[in-house]
Length: 132
Image (cartoon, rainbow, N blue to C red; front, side, top):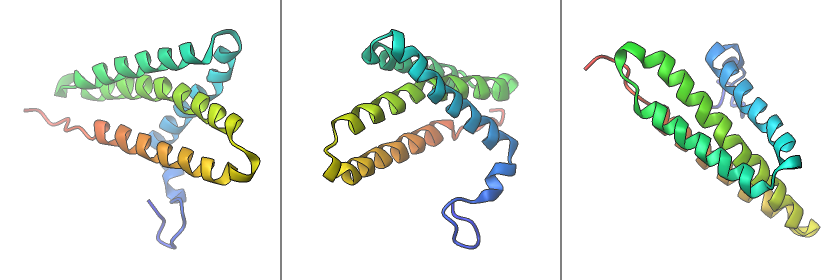
């Protein structure tokens, strides 16, 4: 989603309220993860995130025209908050085991994973809300 000048990120996205909301939800989910990891094992935090993401997918599967927008928003929030712990905890684990001389290669693996995750989220959120 490069800008017209070839920028890596189209800054006009930050003027879009839906984008800002989605970004805020993702940031909040990522910021809450370390709080949970302090008192709960990372594996359980990740499992809880997967359960929450599965619930989000279930909510998204229930979209139909009369409640389309509300269902889409609720499912997207659950999905985003549920997937945030996976990214945060797995990144911390990968960085912790990465040898200093290979840190760049490990970061590329993390970035590739994040791009696939975002593509998957966008693919599942590409729904038709028109009445059938």
